Image (cartoon, rainbow, N blue to C red; front, top):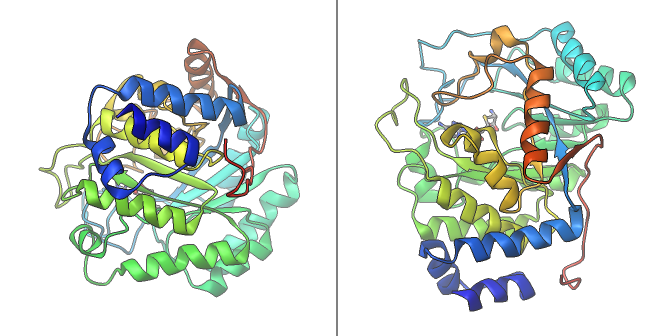
Length: 350
Ligand code: SAH
């Protein structure tokens, strides 16, 4: 196993058989985390980038089987933020040292391109030193281009699973894996720092699926990769499925760090939800980003994509200070920076 990890470390790749062996192994996890952490430290030192997450709407027209804000969940109490709400989140976030604002939401038709562009350009003109990230789902090339021209810098759209059959098991018929992938290539082509990713331990996922996810990411070459455990939500068709495991998630984070040395890799809220110190362990396994919540407290609980989501009762400031404490307890520090992606060439091995 050590040989496979060393090969990943030195060449940034391994073949499918080796990856399968590594993903399914146990016993070498600490060695894997250490190697990933050393690469992470080489490029990012002990810096941890923060992104202020603003959950702008829990209305969604889609019906993904895993997601708590799916359209048919009649128990979801729906809300959307106004432009003023969003700008006041940015204001308090800026004072706290955030230099990236992430607007995430369900696919809510209320937010037309015109409204999104207006909000993005307002944020950019008020905070020209900040990056704006959007995570609003699948849109047309023209829409993505309009948001980019309005000033959006980054876009997060997890591919969810690279395998078509697996994709079909997680989504209803009207959603198509090829369209999701097309969106991601469109985003890259437009010039966004693009983020993709997948859930770990989602229902029906196999080791082969995880390897396909890695291969897809190698083709896409994203600036960011968001992964986190699947966590079941009580009002979804997947309510009876088990959550993804902490161990597998940490292992995947480390493997991704070894293959993509400079990629922006968050220790996600979902990781902090399945384990109290999940985010700290994620950072120690190679992650370099955390995304504290800047949404108004009264709406936090309503953006419930999975059960028992953490940080739903805290003010933005508390969220940031809590994470700051958590990071310094493991020898890392949160920095005031846009935290842009460092590009490296494929020939520039560790
Ligand atoms: N509408 C946007 C944002 C979706 S929410 C979009 O389509 O990109 C952001 C991410 O949360 C999703 O991409 C999904 O990977 C994750 N997510 C949704 N439900 C989840 C669950 N039950 N457990 C863990 N992660 C989940």
